[in-house]
Length: 265
Image (cartoon, rainbow, N blue to C red; front, side, top):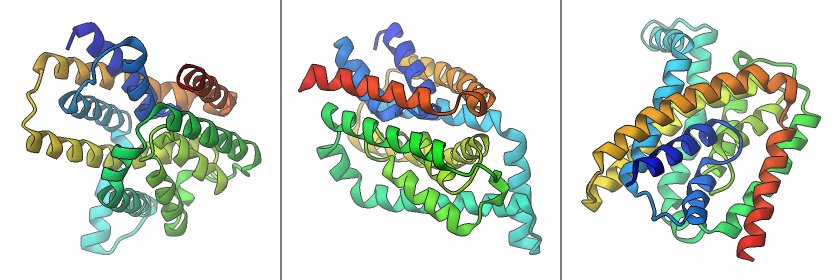
């Protein structure tokens, strides 16, 4: 893979993984519009690892506190807001794991086409805007209980459909449940840790079973660039989301969907 291609795709992954605009949709569309060959499984694993590094680095303090409290709850029966949040993140990860195991083959075979991406970009973009407008926006992420975590987790499972956006649909669900914009984003990003790890592990297993060769230079570029871009993207979104809301991202999704339809219809 050409280094420029690796840098562009890593930037796309780092931005679109955490902005509510769909990373899978962009990674399908960008190579198509630029006339590039598919980047391959090895590069997908690399950029997933990079974005995982980004969220681990940005949330290192709350994740450390959650991990310590979770172990205290398991082995000492001591519960606090951090252990409850950790349990909610674990519970919220279960639906996407089950749906991925059952339907990943069907999704990859039937749903990875541009017009389907245009539809999901539009529909879930409008849904996100409605949740932003109508949600009460009163609670923080520590108020999430097991029922709310399961709802957000089921929403995350929908993100297996290209064009949906994992961060977009989980933020949408959080807003619908009364979380503030920044709280919904923070819970979405915490939920990304096991979600991205599972996606990377799944793609890694496919890579091992396929016997596909690895372009180590491209993978190294992908890890570093997607990690830096992802970290900056998280910081940016959490800083501005309360001020600008989600309408700009909805409009962007509708614009991209229109471009797709005009090109492929």
